[in-house]
Length: 305
Image 1 (cartoon, rainbow, N blue to C red):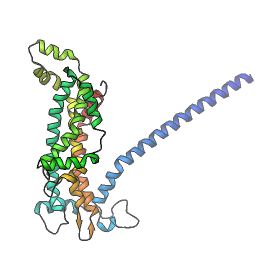
Image 2 (image 1 turned 90 degrees about the horizontal axis):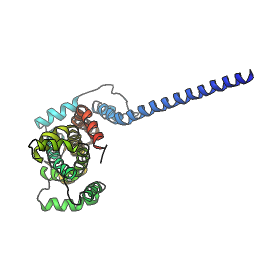
Image 3 (image 1 turned 30 degrees about the horizontal axis):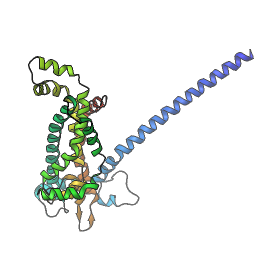
């Protein structure tokens, strides 16, 4: 009888310990999720709160977590003031829409060039017998380990000799050079997941290899193309360092423009936060609309490489 009681108590104790372990794991998991959300969403939320807070509340001590008198004057200043060229606005406001347009143009053209040329190059390395292609692919991967700041002086001299300094085409050229290797690497891995039999069947039916690429492989590579397009666009849109070095008064992008909101009284951090919110909207919309395809493209391209 004593033995049975001991076994029963041990069973209850073991079950209790397992329940507590499961509860602890779940608690830690949810705490980690909450912390991650705070880290990701927190800065953007604070930037939005700063953008609608009056200047006096931004300077208050202790700071106000939520504005007592929210205002949209800064948003009106950026769009109405910038469009009307008002001289009463802080320096940099009149250039905001131009910076927004420059970022859009640079990001779109960089994406088009990288995706079109990178897809063809990746297909060639994935399907054709190219001598030394494995070494070349490794060199592509290695090139991404080099920080931009290390080669900024040679790049500056090169762009200056090409007469592309302070121009959008020079910025597109630089962005393409840095992002094209990543596009090639991702699409190369994605093409390797597609069976060779698909192209062989198309060529048996009379298609050339290029026609098989356009009519068979490209339609099947939609998720991968969307993933690299979104990656290239977002990287171009968010880039700051090269845009700061290689652009002039009329070619600055949105990331550079928002740092120049200043007046005779100093930097207007509220206006800077407003520009940051507006500049974040296109990437957020793009990521939200294409998240399913981005995840599918990146995960499919990582299966085999």
